[in-house]
Image (cartoon, rainbow, N blue to C red; front, top):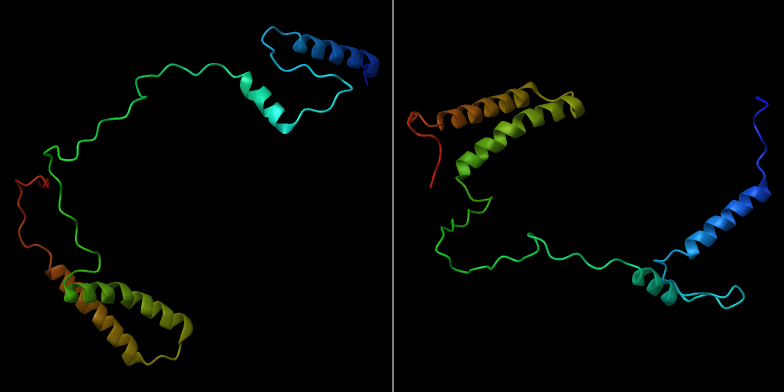
Length: 152
């Protein structure tokens, strides 16, 4: 330990604290209600009012403080409502279910049913291959190289 280290002097600390409190209470911006040391404690409503009475004035409105006028029919294009998610060609939906469900089914069989018949696994693989082939052949055959992909 160094000889320069001093023990904290509580009387000096108390004096500094009292001086700080006295200077803060005497600040010109302080408009808090005066309170007697022996008087009753302020109520919660008085404390809240004292906090909010000391707030700065609200700022003037800025460039983003406005509400845009909404026009119901301004003549712009409104796209039609998209179809529901469950609506589609049943054969395509079945092909997607088999293409996704085939590998998942094989994984579950490998984990939980080790003695599954080989014909069941070969059937699942065949259904998976058939559904993926069907989905590939449903892809467009031609490509329009002048099309940039935008639709109106």
